[in-house]
Structures are given as C-alpha cells and as structure tokens.
Image (cartoon, rainbow, N blue to C red):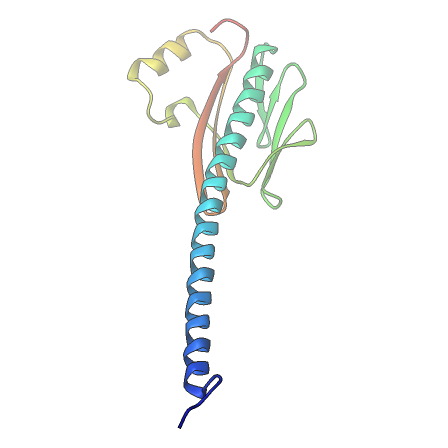
Length: 156
C-alpha cells in the first residue's frame, strides 16, 4: 500500500517536537532576561548610591554645620535630605533624589564598619561637624548597602 501525504504519526511527532523546541526557546529567553535584569539591578543600585554620596558630599562642602532633625539630615547651606519609607525614596530639598531605598538610617561614627581604628580618633579630635548615614538599595533582586560619611567644609 503506497500512502502519500502526512500520516497521523508524523503529525504527532511534528507537534511534539514543535512544543519541545518552543519550551526550550522560552526557557532560555526567560533565563537570559533574568540575568539581564540582575545585571541591570546591580548597575542601578550602584548608580543610586553614588548619586546620593555625590550630593551629600557637595552639600557638606558648601556648609559649616550639619544637623539631624527628626530623621532628616540638614546642612547649613539649606540642603535637606529626608527619607520616605512608604515610597522608598530619599528627597533632597523636597524633590526626589534617589529611589528604591530599602533603608536609611542616621548612625554614629562608632557604628561605621570597615574603617581603620585611627579614623574615629582623628575625626572626633578635629571637632568638625560630620554626618554618617547607612543606606540600603534594592532593585531587581540586587541589594547594595553602603555607609556614607561626610564632614563640613572644603578641607578634610
């Protein structure tokens, strides 16, 4: 018997192979997308931390005093940094400076980690105003925690 055309068995094999290759392609695509998001998250949190550090350093350079008032960091040049835990943003002078902030704490110089033992005695002996904050950023599953230390004035 000479059969021509597509048999039922070849149709089943074709459909099974089609779904197998489709599942493989979707799986690879999702995995690559996840890795790209992970890398994008790492870049984002680092960028946000650097932006905050840069702005706080500039505010400190232009100031003579730093005050901590109700969880806000207030510089004498009228720059004010505040944290909104519901929106997870840090505001500078009322405008959004950085986003995706999981935690923002004003800390003491004794709470700083990873510093030389002589650092605290050098800083406190100078009787200069300073501010220490601990900040944690999170985006696309990537977390970045940093501590920022700034002193007032242009000369360190």
